[in-house]
Image (cartoon, rainbow, N blue to C red):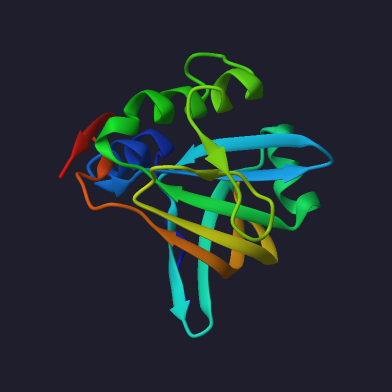
Length: 164
């Protein structure tokens, strides 16, 4: 049996900072309350049926709304959305109305907020939420898609925003 290795969480975060991640905003709506969070931990699971996952920090009680609503949208950002990514990261301490007021939003199928002008929006029905360590892995079946105009994608690497 292998002995479990323990690593310093600071070293782990420093190493992960070297990973270039696409920047997205996960959004939901429940009981008239909107919530959105900037994420880089999201990926495709399958194309048949269309399924993806997004990881949300569950130390923030405001993120519980994603599980309660049963729906979410994953909004893929472009370079021009950097200020929006910063706002939804919580760095500016803006409330939900201020954050959502920075851009135009509509809905596709589920009622979760969909960013007008996003590179792509994946509208999802939550099929599983699994807590793992500090985060909850939200697995969603994609029930609606909007493909936006091509343009420079927004990335996060070395603790800063970049684009390709």
